[in-house]
Every structure is written in structure tokens, then in C-alpha cells.
Length: 360
Ligand code: ATP
Image (cartoon, rainbow, N blue to C red):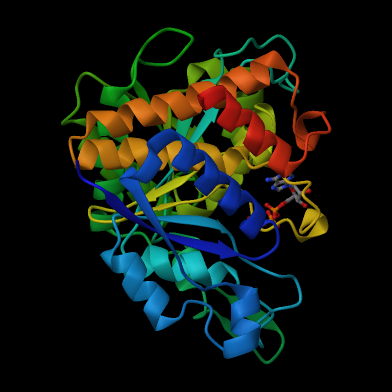
């Protein structure tokens, strides 16, 4: 049976705690089918060595079957322009490995109470696909600050970039079973096409791609309006495709409606590589105290299994992904071990043990 090489980068803040938790759970689920190799990187590593993503780590990531990451970034570790160093770990991986689709499922699990009244488990279940290599963040490091008076960053949208993320989103909608409200397969394009040419172009290219998917409905929403819709009618959504920064903001909002950042998984996918980490950052306020919820990283690990299963036609990995997700949901539904961010008092290691017990 094939084994898979997984490079793991713990990173900073809560990164090591949540990453080690996910590794423990994945080992429990898959035994020796996964070979984990730890690699350096992150803000603390930069402070020590001057490299946030050392060449050895990049090469290992490039050559591995998949990458599992905790989180990176420390508040005091910044470049001279004031931006945080830690983000460069995953930004460099995104750009250099061309991880163009950032997939962030928003799903209300059993045992989790949404801050939105009246929504039952499973009734909120959509996916945000954040374009991950262009948009406003593409100009990171290349913005201009002029005479201490004016600052600019450039929003970049290319036909190639939109076509591929739009195709990815429509293909994803085809594999899903439609929006919870009406069962219709739907891709919602999130932009500000009414204000900026770049967004009107984003919308136009998505509309062109939609013509190849007559079985999937296309829908449009302005980035400001959709923040209200996600609170008032979350069941209307199936797949949402958004420009990089809009996707970043929306996915935090979506996560907030289903329990918060501690349960928000994320997969950053290209045609040849995949990086898996929770949608949250390094949460320095709770780091090193065993307080973080590992569920986001564990669920990202399940996404990794599912992605590997599809790439390598490996049914055992698919079964493993299902088992991990079901174990997390069962632990939440039982309500004996509840992480602090969901109103309980279970520590990171206690949540890990509970998920492993459930798997056994
Ligand atoms: P980034 O910009 O790098 O995504 P951020 O500034 O948005 O990071 P996070 O590190 O994501 O901030 O965390 C925001 C807050 O959410 C944290 O201060 C923490 O209280 C909470 N949080 C984030 N992740 C978790 C987690 N896994 N478990 C518990 N709480 C978390």
C-alpha cells in the first residue's frame, strides 16, 4: 500500500500545539500510511536565522505529497515596513507552489451552537473558495509609501487567475449536493463589480466560465451585501468564489457563524500541491498554555486526506477523512469535552485525546 510523505511546519504561537494535535489524530486514523517530517519556518525562525521559509523547508514542501502547517506569525516580528514576517511563510508557499484555490468550508457541526438564532446542525453548510494568488494581496511587499503622505497597493486580477479559480469552484459545486435551502447547485461570485473595473472583470470572467456548467446556477453578490446575507440566509449558499482579500474577510465571518476560528478548516490547493492549516492565525494571546482548540487543524488534516485520496485514487484515505470528521463531530455532539472557544474548558491535549478515543 502506498505511503505518503507529509511535511509538517509547526510555526509560531499556537501553531506547534495544534499541529502536533493534528499529527497525533492523523496517526491514530491512518497508522503508518502517512510519514511525517518536521521542517523549520515561521516568525521565530526568522528572528533566529533571517529566513521565514528556509530553502530546505521549501524544497521539502515542493517534494512532499502534502504540507500540514500549524500557524505562523508573532506580533513583534515585523519587516521595516511594519508588515508581519510570519505571514510570508504561507504567502511564499502560496505563490511559489501556485496554490490558487483556498477552500474554506463553513459547516455547523452537531453540538455547536451558532450565534445566529434558529439554525440547526447541518443547516449551515457552504464553502468559500478564496482566490489565493492574486487580488489585493498579490502586491504585498511592492506597495508604495510616498513622502509619508500617500500609500498605494495594487489589486491584480488576471484572466488566467480568475478562470482557474472559477473552474475549481464550479467543479466543487458539481461534487456537492447543492445549497441547504433549495438543493440547487450554486456558485456565488463575490465582488464589488459596481465600483472597480478589476472586480467587474472578475465577475465577467466567472460568468464566461459558468457557461460551461449549465447544471450549476451562477449568482452574484457584492462583498458588503453578502456579509448581511451570510447572517440572515446562510442556507442559500453552496459555493462562494471571492477575490483574495474578500475571501479572507468573508471566511472569518463565516467561521464566526459556526463556532469561530478554532473550528475553521482550510485547504490551499494548486494543480500539484496542497497546504493544509486552520483558517486562524497564531493566536499569540493564548499560545503555549494548552488553551487553543486543535479542531481547525484536525479538520484541515481531514481535508488533506480527502485531497490525497482523490489525487491517488486511494479509498482508504477517503475512509480515513470521513472517520476523522465523524470523530470530531461525535466528540462535539457528546459534549463531554468542549474547547474553550466553544464555551467549554477542555484543553488542546484533552480535545486531541477525545478525538483519538473516538477514532479507536
Ligand atoms: P492572522 O491575521 O494571522 O490570520 P489574526 O490576527 O486574524 O491572525 P488569529 O491568530 O487568527 O488572529 O486569532 C484571533 C483570535 O481568535 C485569537 O486571539 C484567539 O483568541 C482566537 N483563536 C484563534 N484561533 C484559535 C484556536 N485555534 N483556538 C482558540 N481560539 C483561537
